[in-house]
Image (cartoon, rainbow, N blue to C red; front, side, top):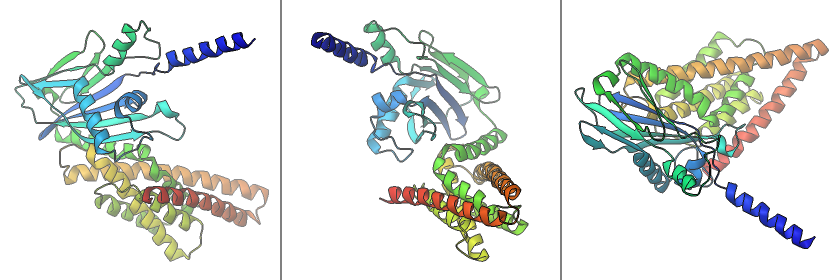
Length: 370
């Protein structure tokens, strides 16, 4: 029995070793944007291979990667996305990098996003390139006689939005593409739309601001908030977005603390409204700061920044409205059980939820400041 157990253990260990590098591979998305002052490449990829074999950063950070990690990301991207224009090779410089993992996603389901900036290209030139992300891993498997698994898709989808949008599906054996620069150059309206989308997307991707948003929705309940209150929060949000600059990791957690304190109703009406406005300004600044590196142009103009702010505030307002509807639904449900005590019951539950959000935000604040 001992020999059988030893053999079984050996086989299990061998199987684990053999499968240790069976990384799931999903298609990489590359969007090339021809802008007046540069060429930009946005790379969006499943994270597991990047983390384990390229970046070697544990634990992975949402942003503010160390210089050594950014250098590895830049080198790998230039190695596997090879661009040329007018017969000259273009080398990209990493200007933004982020890692996103939603609370419901497991380790290998996060996303790595990179933005590379290249010198400007002229309309008379042809933009061409090759893309073969993770090709060294595919070759390693082939040389080791390991099959390419169904969970491994080595395609790269290259999209070039412009006057006409070009889309190329690259795969092993067919890794090259080309497009005239004049056709790939987008106009001002396209840049504004891109900025609007970028700002809107930050509400979903920069998750550190979610606790503040949830606390704000909770603080506005029950019922419909007054016009004065809504306008004050919206004005504060636009002011915060206008003040965006270098990202500060602790800012959204501080916003969560302030919004949770307002939701707990520990202060009078005027201080509570001031806390709500301050939280809205801080979280808007956080999202806009996260969006700035992804906006069109090496130095986004006022129009692009305004469109981004409009996008993020619109999405945040919609999410807060959904939260307010959920809180009001709970208030109505409580009134069905005891109309006389409904207001008191809701106040207690709101305070309990606010304290929970306060604890989460305080912990996040302590982690980022420590």
